[in-house]
Length: 298
Image (cartoon, rainbow, N blue to C red; front, side):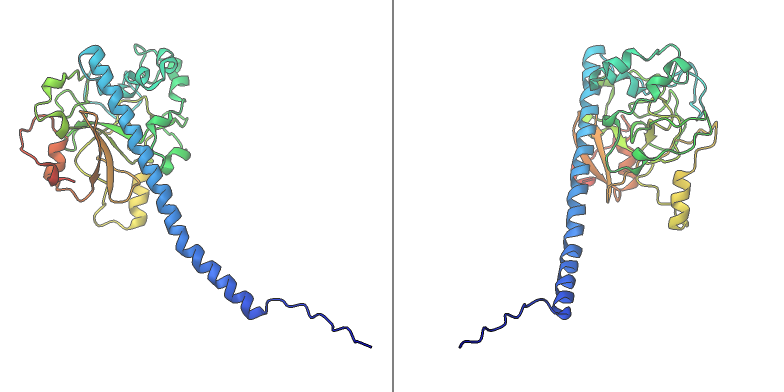
């Protein structure tokens, strides 16, 4: 008579289970940065595509009207950071060339950016005007100026090469009541920045307003805040600009190492934040007559 052998069920020991869990944890730790880097690369590429669309829209506008759009339209200058005046931004003028004809037609340019009749347009969120890497796209800060939060843009036209109020005397390409022809950009279209990324959680007037919300200068890239702690830098960046201020600010982005910019010729390039300060100013001045080579800032 044969005695049936009892089958012994095998399983993982506690030690084996812990080893497997540790290995999985290590693999996840190795893969996660790669996944995040791939996502950021995709977001940066989308940002470049947005700027390419804006550059193409500006060139189509120039082809139609013979000049680039005004950086901001207003009867007087300089432009102060307050909801007073016309302040219609270049972003509004480019709407028909961004497949936003309906939005453009709903905006009354004679009434200006802050008229109640134009509020529905100001509340429209336009994806082409927002970098996907920016957390500002998904946050709303209290708007002390008008009591409501308006969608902002992470792209700004270049009004000047240094920190200076937005006015008719600026040397950029998009400034107060500007109507520049391509031939008036003496330094060449490939050496003059048209639009760049910007940072500024404290912006309150929205993408329609031709203030620092849609115009910046090439005085700096990514505010360094010398002498400030990281916490102080973040708080300063989020702090709303004082009502009536003439401060405009420089360029910035949430990409590592620099910003995406589009030149007047429509080319999009990544500009390092370590670029020489003088070269950066030259790129924001349409006719400083300075000789430059591409290798100087790439």
